[in-house]
Image (cartoon, rainbow over all chains, first blue to last red; front, top):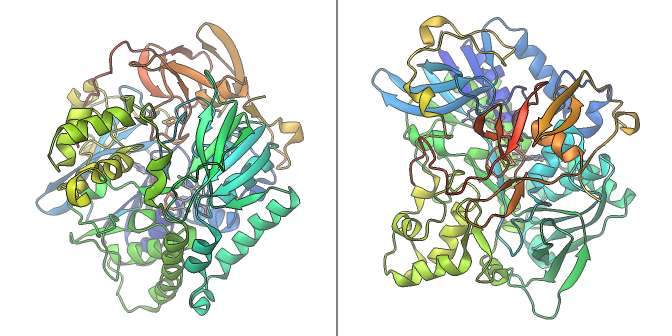
Amino acid sequence: MADVLVIGAGPAGLAAAAAAREAGGEVTLLDSSDVLGGQYWRHLPDSRPAERERLLHHGWDTFTALRRRLESDPHVRIVTSAQVWAIERDTGVPAVVHVLVGPPDAGGRQRLALRPDAVVFATGAHDRTLPFPGWDLPGVFTGGAAQALAKGERIAVGRRVLVAGAGPFLLPVAASLTQTGATVVGVLEANRLSTLVKGWAPRPWQLASTHAKARELAGYVANHVRHAIPYRTGRAVVAAHGTDRVTSVTTAAVDAAWTPIAGTERTVEVDAVCVSHGFTPRLELAIAAGCALTPDRFVMTGPDQQTNVVGLYAAGEITGIGGVDLAMAEGSIAGWAAAGGPPDDKAVRDGRRRRAAYRAFAARLEAAHGIRPGWTGWLDSHTIVCRCEEVSFGRLCGAADATSTTSLRSLKLSSRAALGICQGRMCGRSVEEILAGRVAGGRLRDEVVADQRPIAVPIRLGDLAARRDPEPPTASPSQSPTPNETE
Amino acid sequence: MSAYLRSAAEDPIRRRDGEPVAISVDGERLTGVQGQSIAGIILATGRLDWRVTSAGSRPRGVFCGIGVCFDCLVTVNDEPDVRACLRRAVHGDVVVQQHDPLPTPVEGSIDG
Ligand SMILES: Cc1cc2nc3c(=O)[nH]c(=O)nc-3n(C[C@H](O)[C@H](O)[C@H](O)COP(=O)(O)OP(=O)(O)OC[C@H]3O[C@@H](n4cnc5c(N)ncnc54)[C@H](O)[C@@H]3O)c2cc1C
Ligand code: FES
């Protein structure tokens, strides 16, 4: 029986684990969180039960059924609070996966090294927020933060909140805020209506089989109408103001390339602003394992979701941003194949059909809502671009102009941008776009380095040094790993 | 006007919050319920920041809320660099604001 390791217990990873079982595999499912569900089904912990939690979710019954199925299966080992921090290549196995099990960032967590027959990467994505003046003020959040705090904690990030950026994700963010009792003063989509229409309208029949998505969107629109939330296109937050927390923001109309249009500025009083312009896939583990990327920098996969490395599969947002349904379709194909399920079995045919339908949806998402290059027009020389190292736009441009190199790596070293503790997760791609805009020809030599993080999270030196940890995991409610896996 | 915790009594999802949890944050006693993150307990009081940046001495709190930005770092029971948005509060936790005078060398972090 193939030993399948699934990394990430979001929609893609859950579907992969279930499909791998159906194909007869022995499954280990890991997630750094202490609950299953990933970003989409982020929910309250068991210690805070809610009778009607499903009100906050789409597909809640799908999730709870999957969870029940996996938790009750003796051939599925679920390890939560399990942070994968490194991946190595070795002979005889597709990868050696290094894990720390225990409370986030705690010293002395239990170390595991797993050597499965196949791995499914389902590590998802995080918000991408473009820098703007004042985005480092407390009270400026990513849309994902507002979402995670609302669903996972029942915290509203503010009472009077503006939601801005790009993409349909802004709608569930607004819905979660209103469900937590906040007033959403508006939702601003930077792309213009004409761009949205061009992106979404062609060949509508391709969308016919994506009605789950349509229903979900219709739900958000109904929420908008009910709460009378204005939705504006072609407008962006171009600055946030306040001394030590946000008190207002400036919004402006932007053209089709997202360049702000002078004279259209307006000030809006808020106590919080949630800004997301898209998503960045969490690629570091797949890259460290040797997986190749596509030109648009997602994990490259074949028809059965296998990467270029035999035995390594990828599913969900790390292969492209397409939402929960695509993530689940890919997960089911990947899990099945990883466990050695026959490729033409009818069990995967449905997954393939759904994948094709939702990929068409994903392509439109990018065409309609993708980031356009004019955003650098709302930066001023003092705008912090790298939040960790506090590198301003002015300093970054100075570093780029002072050197004639086209190497991202050396530009980062000379400016310190993207070298802080988040390892460039927040600003890496923005730094890259700013720098690429300033070098002749607009292309950097080594852009892939922005996604390379051989150590996926900072870990304590003591943990690196400790070869064996006698303590069992403390925070993980799941089964203890077998001793021969501890290092 | 600021961040807040939706009260269980008003929450349309009919939530029952569990055991109370008390932690100390910069010497102040804050109470929450079991299962809340340290960030959640602080945000529920309306406070938005609990870290001071190294270079600019600027206030920071939650930005990404899911463990990727590292803006929310705190020292918990003498252990620095704990992401407050991820770590669930444990009764008796002593949380202290972090202000590292120089950029913290990131152990194990490799440029790239
Ligand atoms: C904060 C947030 C909220 C979102 N909310 C919505 C929403 O309401 N509606 C919507 O349509 N879309 C939402 N999205 C988009 C969302 O990413 C997708 O719809 C969907 O969740 C993707 O599924 P996935 O399985 O690919 O990834 P995810 O759901 O992101 O799951 C990935 C999982 O991998 C785990 N993981 C990652 N790296 C590691 C590691 N190194 N070690 C161990 N575990 C790891 C993570 O903890 C996570 O649980 C949200 C995204 C974010 C970032
Ligand atoms: S808020 Fe980003 S890591 Fe905690």
